[in-house]
Each structure stands twice: as C-alpha cells, then as structure tokens.
Amino acid sequence: EVQLVQSGAEVKKPGESLKISCKGSGYSFTSYWIGWVRQMPGKGLEWMGIIYPGDSDTRYSPSFQGQVTISADKSISTAYLQWSSLKASDTAMYYCARRGIAGADYWGQGTLVTVSS
Amino acid sequence: EIVMTQSPATLSVSPGERATLSCRASQSVSSNLAWYQQKPGQAPRLLIYGASTRATGIPARFSGSGSGTEFTLTISSLQSEDFAVYYCQQYNNWSEVTFGGGTKVEIK
Image 1 (tube, each protein chain N blue to C red):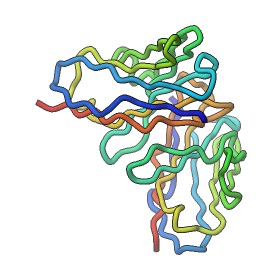
Image 2: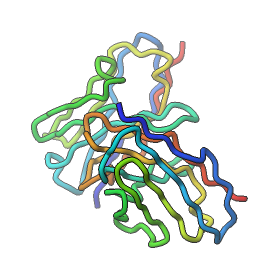
Image 3: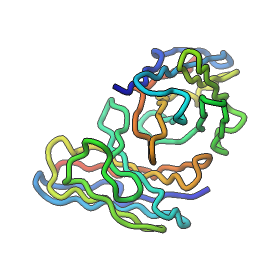
Image 4: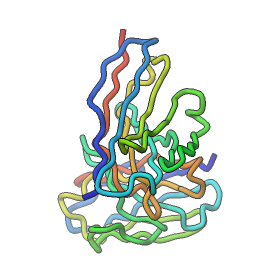
C-alpha cells in the first residue's frame, strides 16, 4: 500500500527555522516526483514545488522560489520542506503529494505549521 | 503563470441531482488537467486526470470533459459523501502547476 506519512504539527515563533518531512512507503520512492502544497486557513490549494528523489532535481513555483527549500534523502525515502526564517504568513497546512501518471495520486495527511509570537 | 478560474464558487444541490462544475484556464493546457475532492479536515483526493480519466477507485458517477481552456466535472447523481470542495489543477508544466480557487458543493 502506497503511503506518505508526514511529520507532526509544529508551533514556531517568527524568525525561527523549520524542516518538516514526508516519508514514502509501499512504492519505489526514487521513481516518483514528490510535490508540496500549501493551504492557508480557510483558503485553497497552492503548489509550492516538486522534487525527484532519484536525483534531487527540484523545481519551485515562482511564488515560492527563494522562500522555502525542498530536499530529499532517498536512503530513508523521505522528502523535506524547510524554512530558514518563518513568518506569521507561513501559518498553514502543508501537504506532500506523489506525482503519479498524471495528477497527484497519493497525498500525505498534512502538517499544520503555526507561526505566532 | 496559467490562471485557473472555477465557477461557481458555491453550488447548492439536492442529493440525487446532477452537479456541473466548470474550470477555465487562461491559456491552453491541452488535457493536462486534474480534479480533486477535499472534505473538511482531510487531504485532497485525486478524482480525474488527463481531463477525463477517473483515478483508481473513483465511482463512475464522476466524469470529466474538456480540453484546451474549458473543462467540466460532472457528478451525475450526488450522494451524501460527495458534498465537499472540488479543485481543478493544471499540470501542463510540473514546475508551474496551478490550482483553481475551488467550488464548494453544498446540500440544498
């Protein structure tokens, strides 16, 4: 069974750093792109970027380029999303999702990030 | 950036009725269009990809059509579990994926 399991909820202060994770299982982790999606409270879905764990080829949506870093460790089948300096506006639910044949076919359960002083 | 516009923002439908949701792209995305369903507190679920192909396990009452810039998701006979928010997504270029703003399907 394909699963993407994300790390737990985080509460951080503005200016702090953070790295959240997404662990894949039940499939060849290095053969599928993994994307990250932001959903701000009460709002829609925003695509942040995507990584191919096989060679760490990474593409960022223009809106998120320079704002976050996407990485992966194929040895432990895990993708990451990180911030070097959080802002209150980073408060959101973050999902990882596997790019399938077309579309994102499997999703993680989401990681809620709250940034508040 | 390709802008995806969904209409209506909210659709009020009675159980058993048909629901028709629209999605328009600001430029052609060919058939690189997916639909997702999201229920409160849950991650999105892939319904349709390639504009018209149902994902694994998706009931036949869900159908997608269109190509280029105009797309439609039809739910032929709404069931109670179908009341949710639906998003379209273009993936013409996976570096610049964009979602529509969503359509909330609510009980009339």
